[in-house]
Amino acid sequence: MFKKGDVVVMHTCGEAKHYHGQLWTGRSDEFTSTSLSQVVFLKVLAVIFLQNICKKLIWLAKH
Image 1 (cartoon, one colour):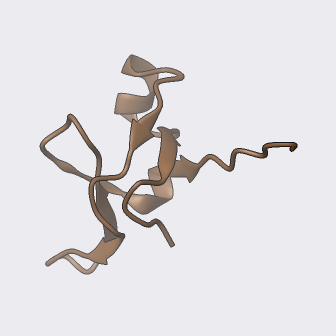
Image 2 (cartoon, helix red, strand yellow):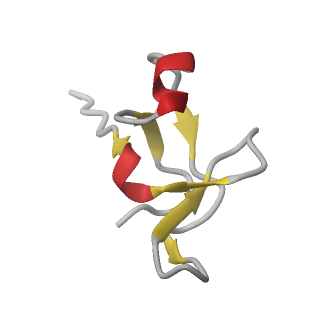
């Protein structure tokens, strides 16, 4: 499940080709849209994206 502030990259959609490798920050927690799809708002873009076309990036830091 995506949470607000998660960093994601798009894949398997038309936008993914246009924004290849672009990192996005979640503007919302994942939620169910009126069409019953799991979606998330991404910062900068004013539309929702299906959560299944986004991959959450997990940053591992060694300290």
